[in-house]
Image (cartoon, rainbow, N blue to C red):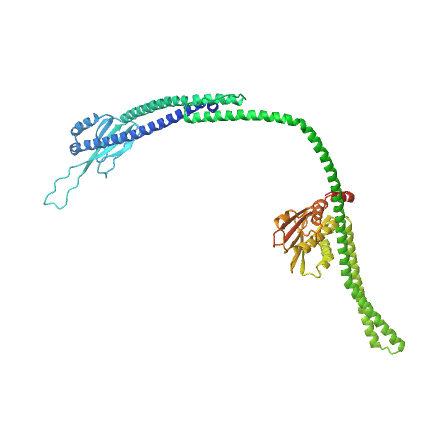
Length: 569
């Protein structure tokens, strides 16, 4: 409830006038400062009065102790009655006790409640404050015998003897009354000053807020669209300056309004001829659009032809690889077959002449067997090469989807690309994780790898007498694999790296580069293969191309639709 009440008044204060907010804020501040000042002054005065009253109690207890020696020596209470009565006559003295050294009371005047009494300390030299409550203090002073004068015949001076104690209990009524009086005076003065300051502030706030209110009224009317308003430039200098600025702003607004009206009239006159200009521009744009459509058709046709030429170039590299790889095993088989033919002719001549010997026949037959084995081995090797290239050719000329081992397909692609590196100082390294089976399209993947290898040879190692191309493949996570092609070639600048997948962009323009290789790579990886490709490169630090493919390629469109999409892109 209190919280809602406080929030209600806080909201009302927030939406009241500036003058009222200023008066309330400063009044609260002045009252707070006055209250704190009065409180501190009262507290400081109470401390000083307390010290004075405590010193008074200590002095009173010492005085009574000095006048009570005879009563404690004789054990007669009558000898101490007069000083005790004089002590009881002091204001706020509630009780006076005269105690023997063992703590037993000899005489007591007055009474005190709720204040425990114990045996005083025995090793004290003067009076002290024994106890204090919220209502009274208790002081204790020891009573000693007076020291005797020293005798010239005694070598040891006699020490004073403890006779007993005087215990004086003094109330705090005077302290409380004085503190209350100080509080009333201090808070009264603070309140009077606060009222005076609040009145002065109210007068000042009225003097400030009146011109502000008038200026606010004029500004509100101007905000509703009224023109010709001016504010009175009176009051304090800063408010007068605000009024002058407002008047200057109104002058500017009226001038701009006149200029705007003139501009509107000019626009109205100009609008009559705008429709004719729009119609002329529309005809011009239609003609330009027709020309752009024809240019786009021509561009798409050129792009399709470039893609076909790229495929033919890939097929040419494949045929060159077949010819190179078949040359060695077929040459070995031909050499072994010719050797066997010569051996068999020699045997036939020896049989015909009847000069053949058993040892020579056995030697020739052994050589024939070895030659036959060599022929068989090389022919089988050629058959394996033909079978592998046949599969690679089928993969690269079709988009047949199948489950295959990634390391084996990449090895076949690199095997077919070896003729490009045969007479170069560049090295190709493979780091292929075996057994990675994926369900994808080996043909498009082969086209991607061939383009990357060719790019490294033509661009990455351009002008270099050495270079290393590393092909890696490994498992990326449970559902994806990664292929990494990295080289230590010339690298690319940031501007080239950002445009590497852009169609018709090439750094070898006019030198045989079509600018479509990397765009085809990008379209195949992100489209048909359903993966991602990323290029990292810096000048003179080589390039690193990372391809991330799913282990199961997404379902794709038909071959005709894919060809149309590739041409349109």
